[in-house]
Image (cartoon, rainbow, N blue to C red):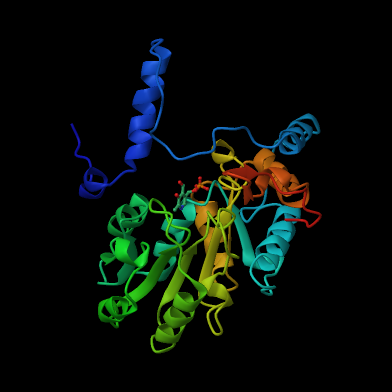
Length: 315
Ligand SMILES: Cc1ncc(COP(=O)(O)O)c(C=O)c1O
């Protein structure tokens, strides 16, 4: 029997998906299961989004699309990402759509480090397990930065400074953070930006997939920090904001890396599902009520969750 590569043998995983497979198998056997395995909305994607997907199917939108995505989605996502990040000048050609936000973690590592060259990637720990597994699988050196409960699951900027070397090529940030829910404040992001000014060789992967799940303050991206826009890979998508985890649609923006990510997609997935792309156009451009986080409203005697009024803004 031929061997399996060392790389494949050692490839990490995301246990949530391992348990999801077990739970699904038990449910198929008729077991009554309450699943705590994977973090995803337990309500469907908004109806207007479902209708857009059905329209796409019925109108024959069944083929491949350009690897970076359909123009309509790149335009909508560019407008959306920029508008939600202080008016950043994101152009449609800076945006690439993929089969979820997840593949861009690997594409970012592959595009900023060289295999076996000792290039280092700093990533949050605890954190989304795919960061570490992809860093290792792609031949870079994983350098964890520890999050501290006492700092509301943020890290110490002095620790970050100590971890940076001239081999550091990529810093992965995730805010709001999976699994702790911690968020990096604007002040912390400004400090990180100031530190990175001294290390121009470092790219930042800003995993902002939970950017619409911020409570109590406005979302602020490291890409908004002066000098950081060009070197920040903004990663967001439809999974969490519009309850579309299984539709597999993410989008990432960076002016220099967009053509590079496009080539990775041509080499791997070819393109994201055309149907999901049209659905995402509607998700971004359509009514936003389903995507709004509930505002905390203090009623006499009890704290209640209340849906905000429908937002007139496009995203
Ligand atoms: C931190 C983080 N990044 C990325 C992803 C991937 O999102 P997607 O479903 O769009 O691939 C997830 C999904 O759980 C996540 O938690």
